[in-house]
Length: 278
Image 1 (tube, one colour):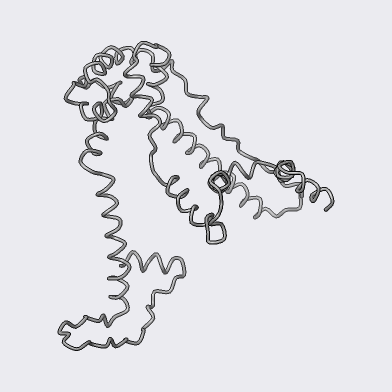
Image 2 (spheres, helix red, strand yellow):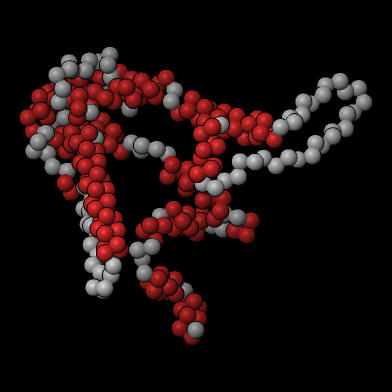
């Protein structure tokens, strides 16, 4: 509660709970039980909002991080670049039996290919390049054309630019660390060697695994916005197109408006005539 109060004060949120009048509930004939009423608005908020939110979070954590999922996540670290380059012993059949059975792979084949691939990766990991996957960061530098700007403004501008450079360096370092610790380098090494089919299939799965399900959950939340009561008779093709447009908004912003209008007008002759006349 103290952290919540500090957060509310920092963001100018009122921490005073509104006192509401108690509502009397009519007791039916023969009813013995009496509902306990909360006198304090803070207690009411705690029982109706805070505790319920904690229950939802705990239920979702228990559903997602089951014992099987945790075991598979633990077995993934055998295929991480950090483990491949370490002096720890090779994995055995019992070490990766859960992940292999989950993805329908032969444990003995994976272990055999793993033992042959690990010394090769130690020799060639510095030669594997993933620079084409790293985003190029361009720092935009601006100059002030007005020479009469005060020294105070110039000093502030220089400090802001120095802060931006520091953030850019930190972002570049984070991207480089991500490339070195992800499963992409081993997958590229296996692709170049082309002699480990089972291990290649497993690394392809590990690379394509989604870190979170937030994108899918956001897409499902947009369904309720798109398919409202005025669009109940919408066909599946039109509905799928609207979901894609709503979900991939960053790509939509890159398309010129004139191109969208021209494509929409070309879909039917009446629309083309209306747009030309207007």
